[in-house]
Length: 317
Ligand SMILES: [Zn+2]
Image (cartoon, rainbow, N blue to C red; front, side, top):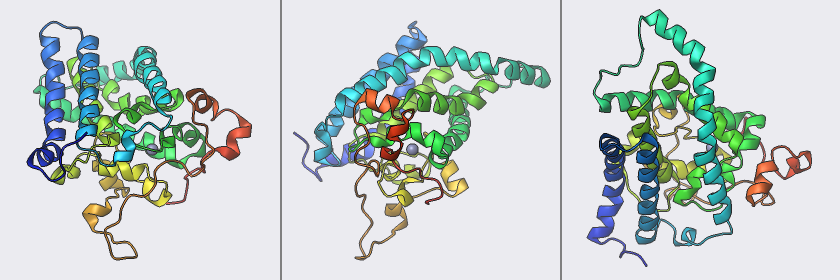
C-alpha cells in the first residue's frame, strides 16, 4: 500500500497535508460549536477524525515503512493516550483554574477588567494563545530534559522506538500534568477560555500528530514557525546532543530565541562522509527500559529501576 514516490499526488500530500489540516481543524471545531455542538463534542470528534487522516497518510506516504509495523507498542500507546488525553484532562482543567483563580482575579482587578483580548478577531486570539502556551510549555519541556527528577517521568514519552501519529499521546500522567500546567499557565492567568481554547487544542492536535507521524512531509518555510515533523524527529534521537533540542510544543520560535534550535537538513550540517546528516535510531539509551504501560507507569517510582532508566540528559548537550 502506498502512492508511488515522486508522483504528483505524492508531492501534493507531502506539501499540502500539513497546511490544509492546520487550517481545517480549528475551522471545523469552530463550525461545530457554531452549529450547536458542545465544546467537548466538537473538539474530541474533530481530533479523533484528524487522527484517522494521519493514520491513512502514514500508509500512503510513509517516511519509514518499517515504522508502520507495530513493535509491541500499540496497547501501551492506546492506554496511555486514553488516560493522559481523555481521563486526566477532566480533572486537570478545573484543578488548574482553581489553583490559579486567585492570581487570575488579582490580575483582572489590577487591569480593571479581563486581560484576555476577547474583542480581537478569533485568528488573532488563536495566534496569541499559541505564543503564550508555548512560552510556558517550552520551559516545562526543557526542564523535563535537564532536571533528573522530571526526566524520570518524561523518559516514558521518549521510550518509543518508532514514531507514528499516536505516539504524541504516550506520556506518564505526572509528565502530562506538568506539561499541561506549564502550557496553560499564561493563558489561564490572562483569562482565556471557551472557543479559542478549543481551537487551540485543535491546532495542538495537528502539531502533536505532525511531530510524531510517520508521513514523509515537506514543510519548507513553515519550519520557521512550527516545531513539527523533521524537527521533532531529531528531538526523539537516541543521541543526546541531538535530542536535547527543539522543545517547543507547537512553535519553534522559543528554540530559536533560547538557542535550542536544531535542524541539520536546513543548516546543511554534513557528517564525516560529507553527506547531509540523517536521523539514526530513536528512543532511550537503555534498551531494558520497561515497555508495557504499567511497567512505565511505575518506572519513575521504583528505586530498583533507576539503573534501568535512561540516563538523565542534564549537562550533556
Ligand atoms: Zn522531550
